[in-house]
Amino acid sequence: MKFSSIATAGLSLAAAATPSCVAFTPSSIKPHHVSSSTRLHVQMEAPPKKIPKIEQLKINSDYLRDPLQDQLQTEEIGISKDAYQIMKYHGSYQQNNRETRGPKDFQFMLRLKQPAGELSPDLYRLLDDLSAKMGQGDLRATTRQCFQMHGILKGDLKTVIASIMNIGSSTVGACGDVSRNVMTTPAPFDTPAYNYAREYSKVFAQLFRPMSPAFSEIWLDGEKAASIETWAKEVEHHNVDEAMLYDSGRGIILEDKTEPLYGTQYLPRKFKIGVTVPGDNSLDVYTNDIGCVVITNDAGELEGFNVMVGGGMGRTHNKESTFARAADHMGFVPKEDIMEVLKAILAAQRDHGNRDVRANARMKYLVHTLGIEKFTKLVESYVGKEIAPWRPMADWKYNDWMGWWEQGDGKLFYGQHVDNGRVKDEGSFRLKSALRAIVDKYNIHSIMSPTQSIIFRDIDPKDKDGIESILREHGIAPIEEVDPNARLAMACPALPLCGLAQGEAERLMPSYVERMRVLLDRMNLPGEEILMRMTGCPNGCARPYMAELAFVGDGSKTYQIWLGGSPVLTRTAYPFMAKMDRDALEDTIEPILAMFIQQRMEFEAFGDFCHRVGSDAISKYSETYVLGSVTA
Image 1: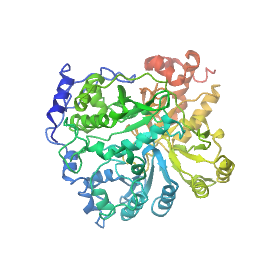
Image 2: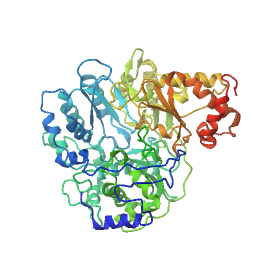
Image 3: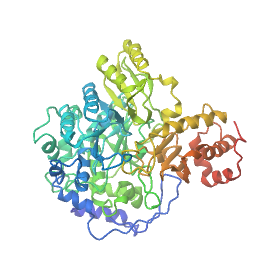
């Protein structure tokens, strides 16, 4: 990929005071500031001399066509490794059930793109039908406000994807090295700030959509979809395409007619954006490559956005050059400049992100390497103007928005908790049927939540009793009967389908929540709420490193323990223990709770306590603690 002289000069200026920080291959970088307590000493790996295979594959793919389009025509039940890498950009992962013996039973997971998490009743009906006829019978709500469907056979992919595209939705860019699903606070309040957050989530999704015609060629035989994407219609008045293609001559726009922002190599790694309002951190905004916070004046008019950069969760076990990171505050951007500034941030990562070492390719490593001030200067070199200081705003709070709420326009919304995102029918628990019954009877629009749950919006108050009746008839407990720690918990799918999983997550987390409840009650902490998360590997799909207490799989039956994340999700946790046997939960956590009981400050949350006292103090206390000796 060729970079403009302006962009290269901008990086040179940004890095001038830091000789060890260079454009592509930072060789020896120690953190100037990491928004966590891990105090890592980072040694970046030396890059290989040749262009990495994945980068060459993207170049050779002819804008995400090859070798996928040929592989889809074969009689094989799966596709090649190279085709699989390109398939990700189309929204799908090839999987197989790792618990079945014999030849691999390849199947595909398909993930939707749903900016702002919005889900129309027609789209829900379609997904419900497709999952029953061509999937494994359930749906999975993700941590990025969209549904994914498992168990699709290769021969059914075209039917499923075409059906989704023709109804005005998409799977394009749900995976791959592009901007992923743009998140926002799921609360559908009818206020200026919340309305702007939803609107600009769709603007940014449209701004950074891949432009390759490969998607329509492969899935729609080159025809246009029967309906354009719903979010594209809703933001037409923003003239997003014009803003996307605007070329200031400062290196943002490439000499590439097909992909003027991405080019033939797209981005070094995935790229995540979140939008919210001051005080509402229900979406984990600090985990995104870019986080935008709506800023309005006293009259409710949009003035611009506070912008943060450099968040990300993924890491690799035993590789200290990789780490989770919370985003840094970059500054305030007026509304008229926001699209150009976000383009500049993406261009900075596109041109200067580490394409040589994929484990260090996320933008968080570029921000970490340069530091926020020098990274901001790099962005300014693309924009041609300075970024204003971050504006003061309300303190962050966390809310999952479950249960009944007034929207502010005479309507109600209802948050339905979904354990670890799995929408299924199982015995007397028939959540999937209940959601379909509600959608069919009331034609309700929904919003996917960042905590793997679903919110019904625009409910007429007279329908409240009917909705509660349907849920009750299908064996769904009211929100008041759900353990608060279950509401706070998240887990990734992990086994048996995820090829990266080292251990259980979704299937184990419910029992961990129950065991923690027993332990808390035994220690006379029945009202204590602890934000817990679990993943089957270190990649961080369930954002474990932001949790107050996290379990990260590092073996078939062992987990790393992470402590000290913020209850309002503004800092990363630190690693406390490696390889806790999954049966040793109580013996491991009880000493920490005992110390918490004895040494906490008034109203101090568990995560804040662990952050304050630190890993060494907790380890020392635990060494001499006698099980069963402390209760509140």
